[in-house]
Length: 162
Image (cartoon, rainbow, N blue to C red; front, side, top):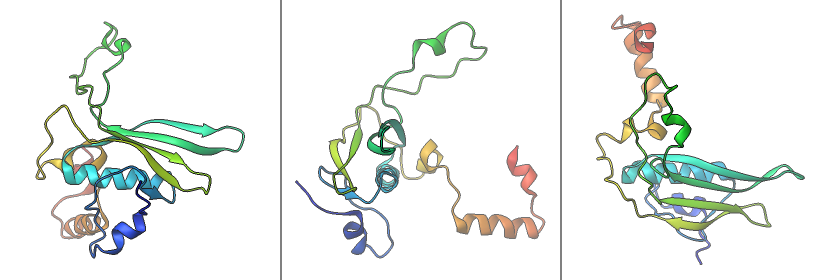
């Protein structure tokens, strides 16, 4: 079992990008770091992630485990297909089994306890990965570029909202 931490993985990487596959025993300081790690791995490989479930210790109020899956995991519930829906959306889920499960250890760290990396669908090419749900984020540089373009009169932020 691997006892590598996220900090050890990032230590040798000058850009801070994750070029490491999820594996059993990989540890994180918290569940958010595990989610960020898997999301970065997903961006690099060509899929999006989704938080499937979370288990908490209700007595002490902390998270005990979390399942993070491919966004195409499972299938839509039947209640979404009823006639009451005015405009039904296209089915995007394929029953993909790619996932990780992180579990809180006795020392408070979170460890990957289950890993499945195989997908049952095609992955997205690197040029299109920014359009996937978990990767639609604007970084600080892009915010600055948008502000500069707005100051130059190229467009206004209200046109972006449309």
